[in-house]
Image (cartoon, rainbow, N blue to C red; front, top):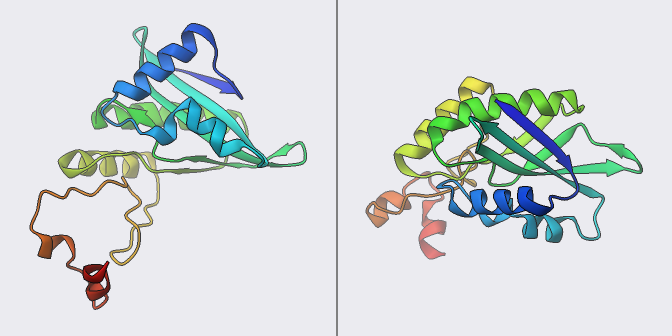
Amino acid sequence: MEVLYLRHRLEGALASEYDQFVDTARGGHYMQTRAYGDVASVGKRVERRFLIARSGGRIRGAALALRSRVGFIPSPSIIMERGPVVDSPEDLEEVLTAMVKTLSRHGVLKIRMQPYWSGSDAIVAARALARVGTAGSEDRDGPHTTTLRLDLDMPRAEIFAGSERSFLRNKV
Protein backbone atom coordinates (compact mmCIF):
# COMPACT_ATOMS: atom_id res chain seq x y z
CA MET A 1 0.00 0.00 0.00
CA GLU A 2 1.31 3.42 -0.97
CA VAL A 3 0.68 6.42 1.29
CA LEU A 4 1.00 9.98 0.06
CA TYR A 5 1.94 12.49 2.77
CA LEU A 6 1.06 16.00 1.66
CA ARG A 7 1.68 19.25 3.48
CA HIS A 8 -0.82 22.10 3.74
CA ARG A 9 -3.05 21.71 0.65
CA LEU A 10 -4.54 19.30 -1.81
CA GLU A 11 -5.26 20.65 -5.26
CA GLY A 12 -6.72 19.59 -8.59
CA ALA A 13 -7.79 16.04 -9.29
CA LEU A 14 -6.22 14.72 -6.09
CA ALA A 15 -8.27 17.18 -4.02
CA SER A 16 -11.47 16.12 -5.78
CA GLU A 17 -10.63 12.46 -5.26
CA TYR A 18 -9.94 13.06 -1.55
CA ASP A 19 -13.21 14.99 -1.13
CA GLN A 20 -15.25 12.31 -2.87
CA PHE A 21 -13.70 9.52 -0.79
CA VAL A 22 -14.26 11.30 2.55
CA ASP A 23 -17.81 12.21 1.48
CA THR A 24 -18.83 8.71 0.35
CA ALA A 25 -16.83 6.41 2.64
CA ARG A 26 -18.92 4.75 5.34
CA GLY A 27 -16.39 5.91 7.96
CA GLY A 28 -16.28 9.49 6.67
CA HIS A 29 -16.80 12.52 8.88
CA TYR A 30 -16.89 16.29 8.28
CA MET A 31 -13.87 16.71 10.58
CA GLN A 32 -11.82 14.92 7.93
CA THR A 33 -12.80 17.29 5.11
CA ARG A 34 -10.46 19.83 3.55
CA ALA A 35 -12.89 22.60 4.53
CA TYR A 36 -12.67 21.60 8.19
CA GLY A 37 -8.88 21.62 7.92
CA ASP A 38 -9.04 25.25 6.85
CA VAL A 39 -11.19 26.15 9.86
CA ALA A 40 -9.21 24.06 12.35
CA SER A 41 -5.91 25.68 11.45
CA VAL A 42 -6.91 29.37 11.23
CA GLY A 43 -5.04 31.51 13.72
CA LYS A 44 -3.34 28.52 15.32
CA ARG A 45 0.12 27.12 15.20
CA VAL A 46 -1.25 24.04 13.52
CA GLU A 47 -0.40 22.73 10.09
CA ARG A 48 -2.57 20.47 7.98
CA ARG A 49 -1.22 17.19 6.68
CA PHE A 50 -3.14 14.97 4.30
CA LEU A 51 -2.53 11.26 4.04
CA ILE A 52 -3.96 9.23 1.19
CA ALA A 53 -3.52 5.45 1.21
CA ARG A 54 -3.85 3.75 -2.17
CA SER A 55 -3.91 0.15 -3.22
CA GLY A 56 -4.73 -1.18 -6.65
CA GLY A 57 -5.07 2.35 -8.01
CA ARG A 58 -7.91 3.34 -5.67
CA ILE A 59 -8.05 5.21 -2.38
CA ARG A 60 -8.49 2.83 0.55
CA GLY A 61 -7.95 5.37 3.33
CA ALA A 62 -7.58 9.10 3.88
CA ALA A 63 -6.81 11.39 6.76
CA LEU A 64 -6.63 15.05 7.59
CA ALA A 65 -4.01 15.26 10.32
CA LEU A 66 -3.28 18.38 12.36
CA ARG A 67 0.27 18.90 13.53
CA SER A 68 1.17 21.71 15.90
CA ARG A 69 4.48 23.50 15.82
CA VAL A 70 6.62 25.73 17.99
CA GLY A 71 8.14 28.32 15.71
CA PHE A 72 9.41 26.30 12.78
CA ILE A 73 9.74 23.06 14.73
CA PRO A 74 6.92 20.55 14.14
CA SER A 75 5.49 18.63 17.06
CA PRO A 76 6.20 14.89 17.23
CA SER A 77 2.46 14.29 17.65
CA ILE A 78 -0.40 14.48 15.20
CA ILE A 79 -4.19 14.51 15.60
CA MET A 80 -6.66 12.79 13.25
CA GLU A 81 -10.05 13.89 14.58
CA ARG A 82 -12.62 11.26 13.53
CA GLY A 83 -10.07 9.59 11.29
CA PRO A 84 -8.51 7.96 9.48
CA VAL A 85 -11.39 7.49 7.06
CA VAL A 86 -11.90 4.08 5.48
CA ASP A 87 -14.93 2.71 3.69
CA SER A 88 -14.86 -0.55 5.62
CA PRO A 89 -13.57 -1.20 9.14
CA GLU A 90 -11.86 -4.29 7.73
CA ASP A 91 -9.52 -1.92 5.83
CA LEU A 92 -8.53 0.02 8.94
CA GLU A 93 -5.64 -2.18 10.09
CA GLU A 94 -3.83 -2.23 6.74
CA VAL A 95 -4.43 1.48 6.09
CA LEU A 96 -3.39 2.53 9.57
CA THR A 97 -0.26 0.35 9.53
CA ALA A 98 0.84 2.03 6.28
CA MET A 99 -0.01 5.51 7.60
CA VAL A 100 1.89 4.94 10.85
CA LYS A 101 4.97 3.87 8.91
CA THR A 102 4.76 6.97 6.71
CA LEU A 103 4.20 9.30 9.66
CA SER A 104 7.14 7.84 11.57
CA ARG A 105 9.40 8.65 8.60
CA HIS A 106 8.24 12.27 9.02
CA GLY A 107 9.14 12.41 12.72
CA VAL A 108 5.72 11.64 14.19
CA LEU A 109 5.95 9.65 17.43
CA LYS A 110 2.37 9.92 18.70
CA ILE A 111 -0.96 9.81 16.85
CA ARG A 112 -4.32 10.63 18.38
CA MET A 113 -7.12 9.20 16.29
CA GLN A 114 -10.79 8.31 16.55
CA PRO A 115 -12.19 6.43 13.57
CA TYR A 116 -15.93 6.91 13.20
CA TRP A 117 -17.91 3.64 13.53
CA SER A 118 -20.83 2.18 15.46
CA GLY A 119 -22.33 -1.20 16.33
CA SER A 120 -20.50 -4.30 15.13
CA ASP A 121 -18.34 -2.12 12.84
CA ALA A 122 -17.04 -0.30 15.93
CA ILE A 123 -15.99 -3.63 17.42
CA VAL A 124 -14.11 -4.55 14.22
CA ALA A 125 -12.47 -1.09 14.19
CA ALA A 126 -11.48 -1.29 17.87
CA ARG A 127 -9.87 -4.72 17.30
CA ALA A 128 -7.96 -3.37 14.29
CA LEU A 129 -6.73 -0.42 16.37
CA ALA A 130 -5.58 -2.79 19.12
CA ARG A 131 -3.69 -4.99 16.62
CA VAL A 132 -1.86 -1.91 15.32
CA GLY A 133 -0.83 -1.14 18.90
CA THR A 134 -3.02 1.78 19.88
CA ALA A 135 -3.96 2.41 23.48
CA GLY A 136 -7.64 3.10 24.13
CA SER A 137 -8.81 5.84 26.45
CA GLU A 138 -12.42 4.90 27.06
CA ASP A 139 -14.13 5.57 30.35
CA ARG A 140 -17.74 4.53 30.90
CA ASP A 141 -18.32 7.86 32.63
CA GLY A 142 -16.47 9.94 30.06
CA PRO A 143 -16.42 10.42 26.32
CA HIS A 144 -16.48 7.37 24.09
CA THR A 145 -13.21 7.81 22.23
CA THR A 146 -12.36 4.59 20.42
CA THR A 147 -14.85 5.17 17.62
CA LEU A 148 -16.89 8.19 18.78
CA ARG A 149 -20.24 6.98 17.51
CA LEU A 150 -22.98 5.68 19.78
CA ASP A 151 -25.38 3.08 18.46
CA LEU A 152 -28.79 4.32 19.68
CA ASP A 153 -30.65 1.22 18.52
CA MET A 154 -31.17 0.02 22.09
CA PRO A 155 -33.50 0.75 25.02
CA ARG A 156 -33.10 4.15 26.68
CA ALA A 157 -32.27 2.53 30.02
CA GLU A 158 -29.37 0.66 28.44
CA ILE A 159 -28.02 3.81 26.77
CA PHE A 160 -27.94 5.68 30.06
CA ALA A 161 -26.81 2.74 32.20
CA GLY A 162 -23.46 3.10 33.87
CA SER A 163 -22.00 3.95 37.19
CA GLU A 164 -23.49 5.86 40.06
CA ARG A 165 -23.39 9.03 37.95
CA SER A 166 -25.87 7.73 35.40
CA PHE A 167 -28.57 9.88 36.99
CA LEU A 168 -26.74 12.94 35.63
CA ARG A 169 -26.96 11.65 32.07
CA ASN A 170 -30.69 11.06 32.48
CA LYS A 171 -31.19 14.73 33.34
CA VAL A 172 -29.27 15.98 30.29
